Length: 395
Image (cartoon, rainbow, N blue to C red; front, side):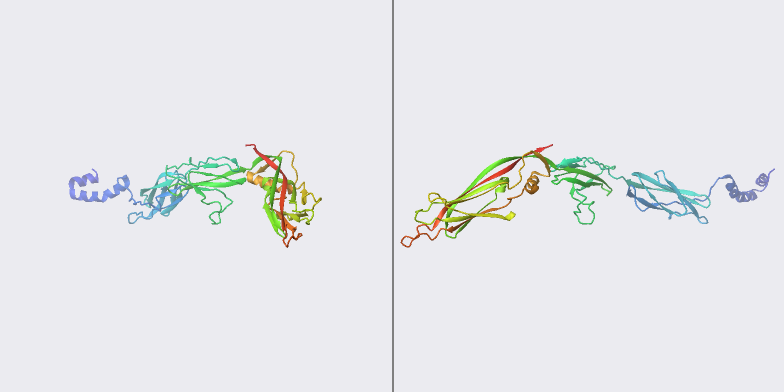
């Protein structure tokens, strides 16, 4: 008979006392109980981040029963990454968007363990979709379209355009971060040829942003130039007394490239041409912008003819007989180029015609009255121009 059976049969009180001492020993040997477990706790310093950012996790508030110590922490970040630490804190970078459950398992020196979890929202970056031409001509409207951009969380997006990386429009020292325009689409017209570089930035409601650079080639326009000849006459008249001056100002170059001109100043016949001295005037042309001038004086070749003076000049600018092509950003720029082409800019600006009555007085007075104290005059000027006939090619 076993000792336990003997005690149970003959001495009930003694049996109970022995069993009270054996049960703890039996529990340790048979697994009926277990090691004391810790109490796990976990906190994150942020509950939401943007993809690519880090979060600090803290499990140092975890506890374990007296006479035991915490020996380690096992971390599962929910994105396939796991790690173990001795300290009760760690950090982790989340590269992808989503909702993640982070779990920490706390272990003590008796192999007791407990787990706690927390959740983290990782916001995804928006994706930029940009539609635009790669090349246009000056003066054309270009449309930049980022309306196809998307947000992984389907939130609203804010779109900002930097239209020129060569210009620091906000004067912050960085020409690549300017806010030149806002909106999902933007239209503008470049009037100068060249390569334009800019960027578009879309930002979601969590301030996550994505930027895309763009390049635009703005090409000049090509024009065919054919020169055609045109002649225009101008005439003025008036009356001048002795030592008086009359000045006429005009801009003949507005009609085209000045090739030649001739001018004739004619005086009216004296009242008594045989008896009275002939009046004489001077005519001067002054092209101030070119520093050029010329002067002539009227003469009477025959008493039956009016006194007159003439001047004529040819080949004032180079001729252009053949058609040729030129590139320019605009028709206005082309016209400036033609005016300045290879010394072909003579005669631009104001022309001054200066008429002076040099010999209108004294004549022979009659009864102390000068019958002819002045004279009538007429000036006729004829210009020959080359006028460009321009047509755009390669449109």
